[in-house]
Length: 129
Length: 382
Figure (cartoon, rainbow over the protein chains, first blue to last red):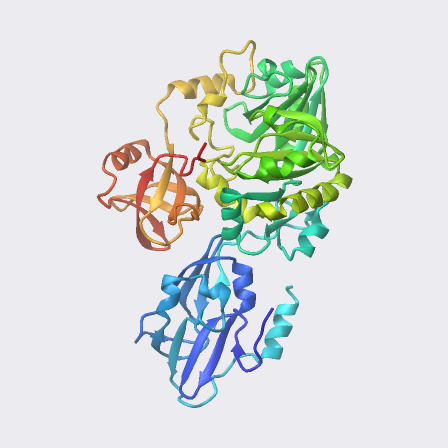
């Protein structure tokens, strides 16, 4: 299972890459393995306000449907149209081509609060392996 | 991300099958299914599904229950205990049947193999094995017949798909061309004694091999080796579920339950009123056979990519007129499919006007357009 060291994580298995005032968001390798084949993804339209810890979208796989929780406070700036056409990108490249959305952060350049480091996230998922 | 509708873990540790070590070595995602630790998928369940449709898949079904009914009164006992006419079954043949409560509700759907005149093997769903064994014991009491739950004495391996026969043949000591659909007989596979049956739950040709627990691993390994060049892939319960759904086959707990009769599920043909003597459920089922149905089981295809799931409402003009029993993305059709119990009037209207958007499935607050589709969704080319 891959957990890139440079990313931040949530206990709900989202990853966050903060680049200045914008955070990219996706689901982790652990999440995509647990879900199985992803067949449908719904993320909020650009311009939608999202709140950390609140559901903002859905991921459907063959066997289940899961809420996506926003890891940060802000406004959706961009969404990944490719995952709409090919939801399997969440399985094949969860940290790359399978990204979900970019959020313009409310707090600008300040590091978003309440996120886990790669080590902390690894510890969280180890218990469930 | 939090999953909403995954099955809740049962109390206690699930039981492993004799093939657990193989599943783990293949990196399977394991799941608790009816108290058994089973492979849900090895890698992609969609790829496993396609392997079964296009080549062959290898399944561990050791969670299924095997109940032997034997003795001079075995056939008569099963005629009384089940809705089918088992005394008419030729030795070596198999039959799909059901066991019902006195009120006609389905206790389980079964495959019964007649191994010899006085020897039957009843295969039950894992979740129902205890109920079925207890009911058979109770119902066989007045007959010279013995009922033994042999679930612990059997592992069950299925090889399913168009290449199943050619993969299995070199390992088998009998000619598979002579093995007809819905038969079961004693044979050897890879030098191990098995009960070899031409049955399955995928909509494909295929075989089910009942082995001793100790023989399960060598038989699996022999099949996996023999099938390597033929596209054989191990397949988990996730693929098994989408395969049987495409094939329009009911799953107990979804389409079948204590609350429905075989007639509700469109399977009234399994109830044989013409056999001699009484059987459990006869009076209630005879009444049900004459009455107008309260609901009908229908196939649905969805006009969007949202997946209808068990329990979701089916809407006609926005009003709930039924409920989804099973739903999944169909790898073969490329669209979501479902089975659902519908009000008969709504089902008739929807079938008459298939494309006007009045039929929908409520997917968490949004009405996704649906249309009635004749079952099965998939029929294998012959």
